[in-house]
Amino acid sequence: MDAAQFSKLLNLLYEGVLAPSAWKDFVNELCAQTGCDMAAVTLHDFANLAPDIGLSVGVPDRTLHEWKDYFGPKNPRTKEIGGILERNGQFLSTGDPALWDSRVRDGEYSDWQIRRDLYYSTLMVVRGTSGIASVSLMRSRSQKPFGPREVSVVKPLMPHIRRVFEIHSQNQALRAVAEAERMALDRLDAAVLAMDDAGRVMAMNECAERILSRAEVVRLSNGKLFAADPPDSKKLEMLVTTAAKGAGSAVTLRTAKSAMPWTIIATPFLSDRVFSRRRPCALIFMLDPLRKPSSRSASLRTAFGLTPAECRLANLLHEGIELRRAAERSGMTFGTARFTLKTVFQKTGTHRQSQLMRLLSSLPGESL
Image (tube, rainbow, N blue to C red; front, side, top):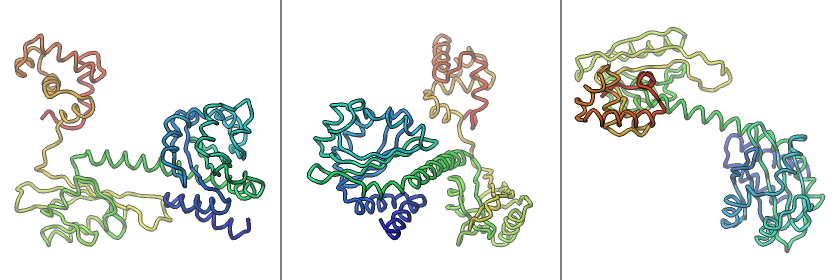
């Protein structure tokens, strides 16, 4: 493989860090340079309990399903490869299932490979901190086995595949954290917006989207916030600008539809991501004075599967009402209330009323 070919493969491989769809371009080019019919990228946990297929080229869907559902977790080479990965961090082999070492040969698995014409293979496996990734290049029986030339193509790529897999794993972890943070923000009763140093909105939660879509108090135009009442727009602009420069403050805005003022709070957000083209510099919080807080009952139903009757009883107890009185308020007999409370304990993982009260106090929302 000449330098231009190797450079092309590396460019496609590292493009996959920013755009995972580019991985397929890399695999297609690798197939072209090694002359193979089929290829697959698979991801594994360390115990190989739930292997997954990242992408494939030329492999029939039926073969992919059989591998993922049965033969992937059953791979008899897991221990052999795992031991080498522990020592070296990577594993490379070529061959065909009929010639596997008898110590790792499994009749059912190798027979399946032969039956599906996954006959000749080059297998690259790398170990990262979060799991294992493998790239399998395969040829049908009608072709020739992989040889030294193919090894000379794939071997220099191994450290780079390992590095890209590590970066990919880190990116996935960051995305998961970002998704969790976004979900948490969407559960808030306040609108939250992130602003850059030019006063443009970079991100917002669902509550903010609803408020801006109504445009009753604040509206969005060309990425910037404006007050519905034009004279207030200057106050809003100064609020954002001041926060972006490092000083938090607040303003109140009034609307014709609400006698109560809206409170808009800005706080600086200091980030050390100095090389980012755009980065948030301020957080804006908008509090709707007429918005009803979310119901604690909704949290109980979503998190623990409580029925409306169970939610009603739990909320009455949380208000300090004695069980017998709470039963009357709920239209239950005392015996039914006691049984319902036991069911609430089971569903919430609590054992005493005091534990249940602490749990309810920690949940968002009010007893609506």
